Length: 396
Image 1 (cartoon, rainbow, N blue to C red):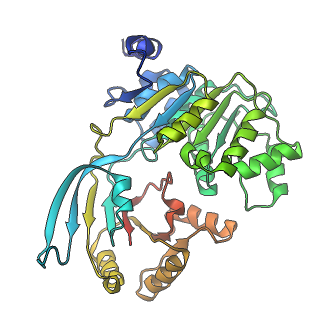
Image 2 (image 1 turned 45 degrees about the horizontal axis):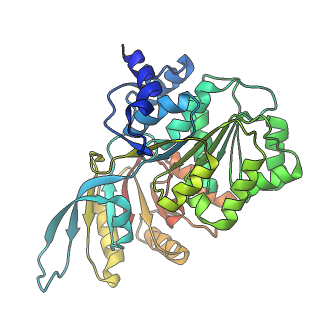
Image 3 (image 1 turned 135 degrees about the vertical axis):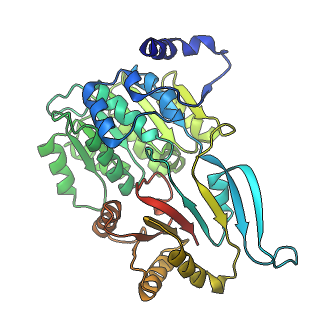
């Protein structure tokens, strides 16, 4: 009965909604991944990873994605939280705890607090699980052909491309015939050519510039592509140069294919651009008035600039953490804070956009593998990056 319910909903949802409604809102998930008619290899990999119930966006989007429908998916991160302010407040120097409800995660970040940290207790896919939608949809539908790229995923950063490739490899581990490849700038071009020519990936993840270079060189062919995915599409499409690169790649693909666009934030302008790439897309949004990230605590500490480093040391000494990410606003600040933490017996690593690509990926991979516990980063890691053991984040 549950399987029939999923099929019926996937086929009939559009007919039961008013014509004027362009998108739908996902509600709480009430099923398991086993109800989604995924192949046994995927169900086995999901079980190994400890995933049983889909998130809200997965519950709404995966059935449609499995049917090959074009999609524009947004999952807005919202939560109820407590703001903790320490310091003078309206002439009063007492500590105050101010509860504020139904505000977005990103509005809190852009408020520029001296410190922001959270504890994450619930295991799930990255963010709201958008990555799982196209990973599972592609792997469930793929029929590998030697030398044919079946699915292309375009990411806006090298770290995101590296991470998405890891998700494909994790959930295709019982599908030995499926080959995943990843290409991005910052590594020698011959290495990217080797990935295409020798590994012959069926699923290719890459950044726009390197993909365009491979297409112009003639080593990459997308004439038999079946799925075209853009992750964090607002970042990729809002800048004209990068949008032109995505459009150039898109024109090298067949007319008949599935197009899926994903992001945490898609404004009306970006949504209009996304619609130009798709045909009658299913638009899915997670209702920010109903969605709460359970088990997440937030605090705000108001301090003078000169007191930040001392307070940071106190927090690191007092808090029980597996791994912590400390976000800073500049590359110079990242290097300086990393040096200061080491001097205070808190060994850390730092990552920013001006580092050499090999070193950035080396540190990123080492942190994901729990070889380091403290990472200082710029907003390079502000979107989409998922590191499972991180249970505290700070914005300083």
